[in-house]
View (cartoon, rainbow over the protein chains, first blue to last red):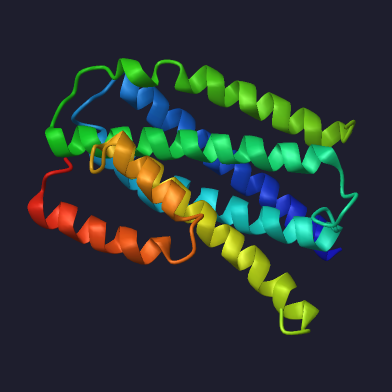
Amino acid sequence: MIYELTKAAHIVSVIVFLSGMAIVEMFLRYPNANTLPAIQNFDRYVTTPAMLLTWALGILLGVLGGWFEVGGGFWFGLKILLVLILSALHGMITGRLRRKVREGNFDPDSATRTALPIGFGLVVVIVLLVTTKAI
Amino acid sequence: MVDIPAATSILGPIHGGMFLLFVWIVIRSWAEGLINGHGAGRLLVGSFIPFGGFINERWLSTQFAEGTDR
């Protein structure tokens, strides 16, 4: 029962985390000085804590489910790698957001144009790995 | 750890989580422009070297005091 509850909380955290990432990515493509404080606060107080909670609950699930043990499954190691890349993507867009605030620059950020499709692609592969555990 | 398996199972995930947080902050600082690519690489490589963190901590203090790595 603890495992199922942890898994449910993990999924909710992931949904909040990914929603927050999508919001920041869209903001970087279409910046607006009026909405900047709200976006920054949402990222600081909702998205980033959701990411940290996702990590913590994910690690707990790995321990409870025995996935860290030898023979736990290749899918789990691959999932951790993809989650690392997804987290790095979030670190990158959060950094770009903070730079925008510091410099007061409200031009569209072309460097993050591919962040959204890459993020969605990572999520698709991660969900496939977790639901099928095929490898 | 010191013949206490439970210690490893508790401290291992905490250590892993802290390392994740460190990498995330390095990448965020790089994207923000607080450190450059060389600095980010130095911090990440240093995290795999024993006591590398102490050397990088002094380096970071110097960089920010001089404001040269922005």
